[in-house]
Amino acid sequence: MEAPASRDVLAIAPDDRHKPVLNHGFVELCDMMPRFVALGRIGAEAAIVDAARVSYGEGTRRVSSDRTLLRYLLRHQHTTPFEQVNFVWRVKAPIFVQRQWRTHRTSSFNEESARYSVVRDEGYVPAAAEVKAQATGVLASAQSGSEPLEHAAAVAVAEKINEARDAAYSTYADLLACSVSREVARTVLPLGMYTTFFWKIDLWNLFHFLRLRMNPRAQEQTRAYAKAIYAILQKVVPEAMSAFDDYIYGTVTLTRPEVEAIRAAAVSGAPLMTAEPVSEENPLSCREREEWHEKRAYLYGGEV
Ligand SMILES: Cc1cc2nc3c(=O)[nH]c(=O)nc-3n(C[C@H](O)[C@H](O)[C@H](O)COP(=O)(O)OP(=O)(O)OC[C@H]3O[C@@H](n4cnc5c(N)ncnc54)[C@H](O)[C@@H]3O)c2cc1C
Image 1 (spheres, rainbow, N blue to C red):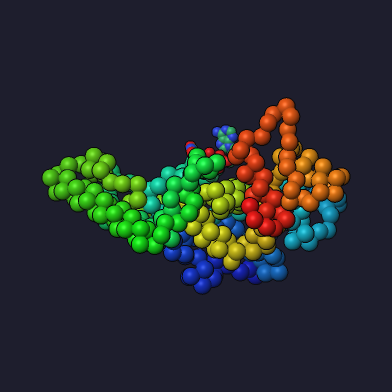
Image 2 (cartoon, rainbow, N blue to C red):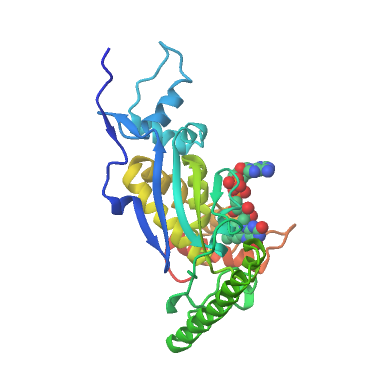
């Protein structure tokens, strides 16, 4: 029997598979599974709905369009069918970004070794807009900075970072020239040096990664990589990404005190923008209130 005609999901413009990120980095989609999809099916997402349909025995199988079923599955957290779609990425990123990336355990990494190869003279230098002041007040413990520095000050900071990196790399090169082993010489290099790695992950866990790392609370430079991956996925699994936008990325999770604040406002007729959550047995922290203001602004519009 002749195999049905299929199309290569990765037969897209090179720019749609490879995105530059930061000053020297990139993300590139190397391969995926399934890669060849029968003509007439929605795309690689066919693997998701086919896996889900195995739940229904022959004869009880419901006729449901691929798109409708895909969206139903994600809406109801039927997650394992999304693990049927797999991706292999090649990434070049500063070590401080890669270190955060590594915490995503439900994926596989293979990173270049600075024990076996010589580290390239390539370091991250922030663009002026990325140089922020340390957050203060309620957000003092937030990982991200808040306000950008004034332009001239930001440029001076970027230059200082570059000088420090140059000095460290020069020491590294001197140590290698003195026959010091690569594994010891590398210890003088800063977190801003670039590294490359292969990264294998399935679609469900990639959704999880994107939800966490595209969030404004994630570090801006790591966010830039997550956004580049998101842009590539929109080209190769557009139906899945539309469902991701609707049922994961664009959603808000409310705590019980927040739900009660909305209910109380509905009963009293007070404007929702003034509703404040109260929890008598467990008083809310300043941080929780700050988070509520952010959610409320997202839900109803207006200033945080
Ligand atoms: C804004 C932000 C700030 C962060 N700050 C820090 C920090 O200061 N220090 C730090 O160390 N990390 C920090 N992290 C990393 C964070 O704690 C998680 O390790 C990371 O986001 C990966 O999330 P995950 O464990 O859900 O993902 P994965 O490791 O991909 O796991 C996915 C899911 O699988 C399950 N799972 C995986 N492994 C196990 C296991 N061994 N046992 C039980 N369940 C498992 C869990 O349900 C988990 O949610 C930060 C992350 C973010 C987004």
